[in-house]
Length: 251
Image (cartoon, rainbow, N blue to C red; front, side, top):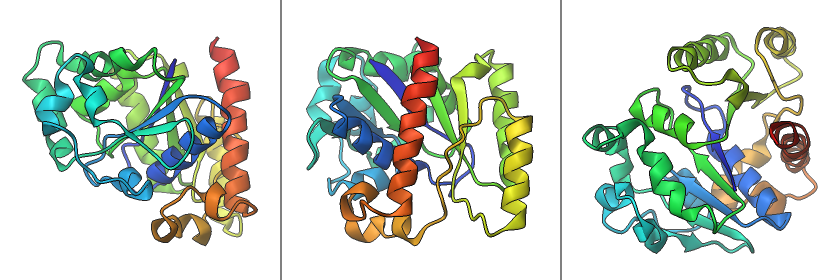
């Protein structure tokens, strides 16, 4: 089993859209896939038309054991399950802080599922606290959407400093460009400079696209309601790069 987080300490960068679409692509390739919605805003849960509710809320979620399986829901797509978000997730960092081995609690929560799935993909909230520590400790890979803007450069540098402070392997972090508008000179210039400045930037960007914004209306992955769109092609190319470049290199 491989565990992935779509994570950024910056909001509004396309984390949930990436998590939903990459989870769908993994499942369509035949891999047993679970998307775990850790964001109290529950957007990934909404996209899959599932009610955002966990049994026993945060207390039930944070208990180690197989209880978590009772909250997992099937989606409309073969091989793809969802662990819904819950509003109580807004207190996850506080809840973890009161438990033993607080920095590794999420890892223990997901442990019983390792034989059930080929991929567990975490849709993470924008935070850089104890929950972020748990997310990075729990996964094999962290994929970070980067909008080519100066603020994204700044926040990604903050994330790398955070990882260095906590002694995380920087090879675990894999940025990719998100919401790219190649008509903008600034986007083109920053993509070039960020690819040189930051290690391991993936080379298949996700475009800024009205099709991706329509996910909120369609409540489906892009490849389902707009399979021939540039956005669907972009997510497919990104997933292919992840499987062929990142996973094979990590074996």
